Image 1: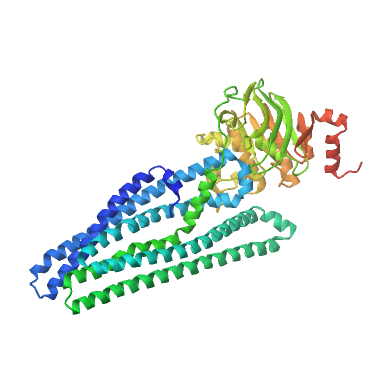
Image 2 (image 1 turned 90 degrees about the vertical axis):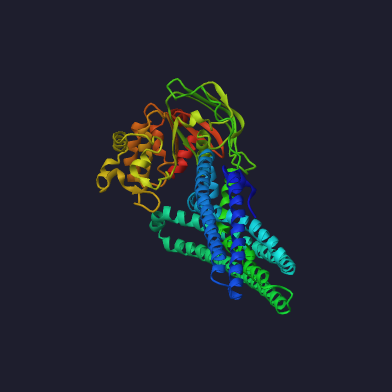
Amino acid sequence: MIDKRLLRLSGTKKVLLMLAGLTILQAFMILFQGKYLAQAIVNSWRLKALAWLYLPMLFFFMALLGRHLLNWLKSHLLDRYASKASAELRQQLLAKLFRLGPSLVAKQGTGNMVTMALDGIDEVENYLSLILNKILNMMIIPWILLVYIFTLDVRSGWLLLVVVPIVILFMIILGFAARDKADKQYAGYQQLANHFVDALRGLATLKLLGISDKYADNVYQVSESYRKQTMSVLRIAVLSTFALDFFTTLSIAVVAVFLGLALLNGQMVLFPALATLILAPEFFMPLRDFSSDYHATLNGKNAMQAVFTILALPQPEQRQLLTAAPTWTADSSLDFTGVNVSYPGSNEADLADISFSVHGYHKIGVIGESGSGKSTLINTLGGFLQPQQGEIKVNGQVVPHLSQAQWQQNFVYLPQKPYLFHATIADNIAFYQPDATTAAIEQAAVQAGLSTWIATLPAGLATMIGEGARGVSGGQGQRIALARAFLDPQRRILLLDEPTAHLDIETEAALKETMMPLFADRLVFFATHRLHWMQQMDYVFVIQQGRLVEQGTPAQLQAQNGAYVSLMTQMRGETL
């Protein structure tokens, strides 16, 4: 019913204890409502003076006010808790994504991760604000009322007690059916999110290739499937609500019949019969509330389980071992010896027996065919993947992996498509330096070649970009990523994973002029299939099928007439 991992969130146990206490008080307020309302009606039925009605009606209204006041306190407490817990979950999720890196995003899907971190956490917040209160109401209120009903009429108490397991059993059966349908719906939601984000990001390419209409039909089919899954969940929800209302109404009617017969036969006086009849609907109310909100919060529960699944993934440990490289300098060194790397769940090494030694500031090109392992090497250098075998040394210090906090504070990572947050241009540039001054941000924008474009924007650096805001071209997005690097000169390592792969030749040529000054006095690893970049590299790694088959300066590799020359010839479309 409740994921036990929910109890790991800070403050959950404290909130549950406070809610339990408030719910017990609320149960007595409901009991007093029924008791004093019945007392007032009985006094009125017996034609007593108005003075006999004032006191029970006063107590009734006080109980009613106390009930709603306690309900408000519970809602206020849950809103604060849900907001804090969901923010904590979002922070943990983003920290986990950062530590696991782009390999996890590539596996799970960008749309899925974005949806989980934004809409998914909002669904979790709604789930937390509803489900804890409903469960405690169901666990506490009916049983306190049932004890009082037994003191009024034992037969009615037994009747309600017998009906409850039947109702709960029916709720469980329909709940399992609704959960299965909701699981499929959430999977469809994730698929739709991935398709939608991929379609938006590749819309220009799809139009250029003339297949945007075909892909639109694909998105339609996915969205239609999601619509059908949603309607299937709604049918189960409506059916369960109808069934629960039917059984509870029938049970209350049966109780009313027996109470009426007892009154007619003189076996019971009016007050206990009337109090029992008033409290009977209140006895079933927590069950009905839980049933209706259970379906409304299934998406939140699925989203929370998905977040917990991501948080449970193994992550690098011993991240504070590196102490030998506070900053990368001309005297620094990085050594790989026999390093093997595999993606999680893979049975084969994606990188095998990788060995190299790098000293000081160099521009290193990493080339190879698609799928050869270029991105895997960049991800390993960034600490996003951890080796299973081999030895890594930084300035002579052996570390198990490069997911070291000190190492990651030294590099800037530029992927094929830098992520732009829903924020201003200035905030996006200041990603690595959130406390940077406006003057420093403006200077970084100038160095990245953004000043001409920014000058055309009415709001300038304050222009909102990212999800749902102003569109940014591929070249502009890469320049914003470059501005991040220019803004933080202390980061002396650049990891570039085909940053110009999706740019046209003219845009790439203009971007190249901006990038070259950034490479000065830095260690650069540049994975690309654009061969003209090799002319600006000091050293080249040639990767084939996960192996570093050649390494050396471009001139040395050209003279060897081996894999480098063969790959260059193949990529140029020449024939030997």
